[in-house]
Length: 266
Image (cartoon, rainbow, N blue to C red; front, side, top):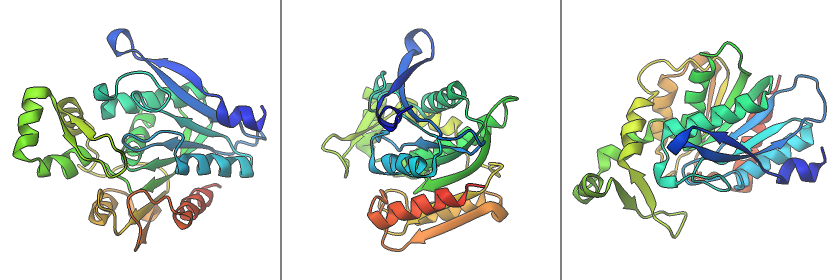
């Protein structure tokens, strides 16, 4: 497969049935060799997609190293079908798992940003339940936001937000990254409670490298500290970036991400 084809031609996978059916877009960069090297898997954050800077840079690194890379858009994001307002952690997790099982990599290194970090942790739990699943070789979590609905949103709901949730089923919040407001639905909040991971030890079965900005206005660095308490300590590295924001998309931040991902290759 040519580099152009590998990095720019989306494929589509139908996930779900009936009213829940949606067409999920994903892009695969094929590995140059068949030496059982791991495949990078990119998991985007809330309202982000596989065309973002970090996703593209991870794919570029895969190309440099001759490795495979899988990127996907959750339903309601990017090139995928489905309505964003119908999205939940369970749905987006189901889609990520479906794409991985469909593409059948032997082993994977998952790189998840913000909400993608939550989905990465849930993905580890779901893969562990399967008899035939790719081996999880490592995780890079960038400003991870596990349980953000119950930990970071619900405790700060204003009266007007609660009224909007009750009357309309969602509330809106100004976004610092888009002219369009963020939308948080009642379904997302309720489903988030069912997908919490900060309730006990999270058995990832692999090394984890967390990158966290200390000037992150969306996910405070104390949240990364809380996550550490739930991960087996021997296999976890936490890198604080003193002047880092939530996106961690500056050249020096990208370099840290790529270095962390390379460091997990055996």
